[in-house]
Image (tube, rainbow, N blue to C red):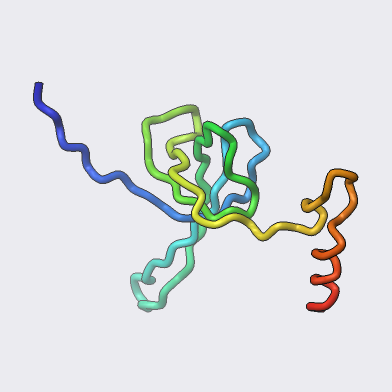
Length: 112
């Protein structure tokens, strides 16, 4: 039995802009291309729907996605890994009683 060599699949790094769907994330990828006539670098943005089997990526995370077989009408990409977590909001960090941690609150007040 011979093993076939698979071509390198396209991968993109982008920011998760939506994680509201189950097992699906929307990733915004920014790329630069040269304008054909003027030669100026122009920023292009494109949204991709990617499969996130374990719902690990959250809104604002920086992730890597790769091309895969069609998984649905729109999904042609899957999540490889989360490269960087989103900055946590103060409202998200709560202790057992449901109150904000005082140390974090004081630290944020000092930095302002």
